[in-house]
Image (cartoon, rainbow, N blue to C red):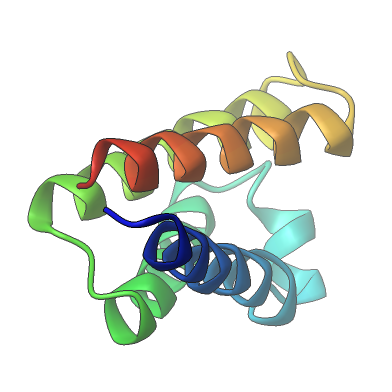
Length: 104
């Protein structure tokens, strides 16, 4: 993949991340996902749907995005293993970068 193509793909994926994780996550979701698996799944499905609509990922990438987002958010909201939003975001961004770099 050419550098310009890689960068534009990465920018699209980053935009999808920020829209899905911030713009489409309501206060209700942010508060309740630590208490309810249903809400956590709903947030992860909404998050992943943004990528499906705008980034057109492969099925493997969709599964990786959904699963890793679910794990990271559960570790932060439900189990408080991750206490910093910066660590939470870093893990999400590293996942995205690896998916894009590998070409999934």
